Image 1 (tube, helix red, strand yellow):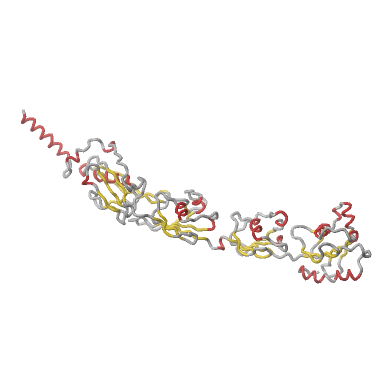
Image 2 (cartoon, rainbow, N blue to C red; image 1 turned 120 degrees about the horizontal axis):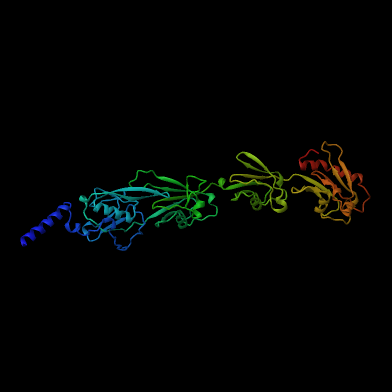
Length: 459
């Protein structure tokens, strides 16, 4: 009876051994009989200096592979420059660059259980990563049925990104933190601006280790980066927003040339020269900065752009600080404000007399000219004011006598007399004989050639 039981036991063991692949430890094969897909995975917890679980492995990282209860399968190695490790049970170098620790755990489990797997590179949001795709199982090639594997990234080298360019005060290498974006890199370099349109930004990215890709140069949309918007501008294809940066990326931030950020203002202004082009291209903003002087002929201003002249009437600015135009300035424009060479003359015992600049922001009348001269009434013969208009053909000037006193008294503004550039206003004193003596009239007429020279008109 005992012989039969012994024979039966030996037969059972022989049958079980026949099911096991050759060369595998028997105890390892018997460690777990649960299906691999449903086997619970024990969380061993992070060890010292362990990277976050979503960290993407890079060359020079030190990987520690632990197989629970199977120290002979444990393995530690720094990732080679080509992004691979030489795990003893794998058939050749295994690529791990771009994988997470969890991805490597899955790959090692596939290796130990005889399962086919494939390293698949991915590109997400402009960042190259990778994953592991498991395939067909080959139990006869398995080392263990249900191994528990944990992978830790240890002794990672100090990583950094480069931030350089004419717009960067603290150029050089900035510490890299996992998940960092372009905004974080710029903040580390101390870069800030409220005019991102004045700068050009590019991101240089070297290909991943072992990759056949060519280096990438990406145009960075600084406005979106500073707004921490990761999405590219749909109206500006080919640019990137606040994307995730990778170790050894290089950010280049350069200030644009002055011709691409400023406009030039010349002519009758207090502050001629280059001035910053407003974000909205506002002419009002520019005029407020350069301050046109009283001799500015704003009605005849012009903008030079790409070899063309654009006339623009800015005379309303003298009234209320506004302009009646929809023209928007662009970087590289030249704003020209000519001198007002239109004059009129006023003579008599008034507060202001002589040759005066004809106003650019309004039409002048006899009443307004009198008001500009101080509006004086005492000592003036207001009922015999004379307006002398030189002839355009060089003939006899037109003399018009105006009862300004009656215009003021009656309030009939329709009787007010328009004053044109080149006109002469004579307001006689009240203590003189009525009319204009011949020598005074002759004196005023003699001013006509001088006035013609000043105004540039042939009078």
